[in-house]
Length: 339
Image (cartoon, rainbow, N blue to C red):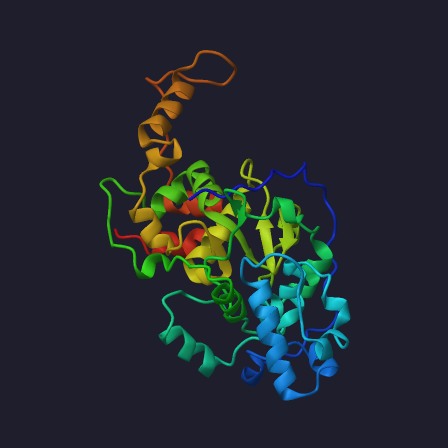
């Protein structure tokens, strides 16, 4: 599956303002999951009328029915402003729980574990009230709807949806790919390893560009990397697929390894299984090419300070040099490699 995202313009440096006070974590009231929004509840106080209103609006907004919304006369007078709204707008205001509700109202841990046990899809749940979501709303430019992640003209849903996003998907009858839970455990010959990513930042950059769409806005991004993202529907969307900074590549790979549910992935699986399903040639890179490039530089007679291959051969980096060059974020990965 490929994801189309328009490439952004050249990023400009700016400072992200941070939220002064962390918001207190408020949990989702489970009794309101299927209730209509509070604004509609105030207009229609009778319980039976509310059920009728919700049923009529749901059938209109989530089916292929054409024309305008039609309601009984006693309801039309109370909600007359709804009659001329398009379907997408009615879906936004109909229910109390919307796709964006999880940004402010996550599930309690006990409820989250219960849903996870009965769901074929891995879910995301906000964990703390002291996150940087509001700071990113200030520090990131917004991504237009026409530039949002899509496939064949249709909008996509995150690989690890929140509970409210899953609820909206079920209302729209959207089938979600269960990802690695149902995928066969297949390992290709000469598959990639974490050491390959550590040794070749170009390969690591192409892996990130091909499979990572974005990261949840509740995850704090280093300020230097903010220009490479745009905000949309609770996600910091990576809006460039070329010239991704090496530090950002390592940051996203570390997130993929530690907490993959924070990421929006094209191929929904862990980093370990993604590497086992691919070879370097899938990303236009071979280990032979890397060796040849080193030898070509060493035998070249053009340019100052270049020696012949008889005196200086290809230099092999030690683990200490590798960690010093790539940073501390990959130190744990290198330490866990087999000897």
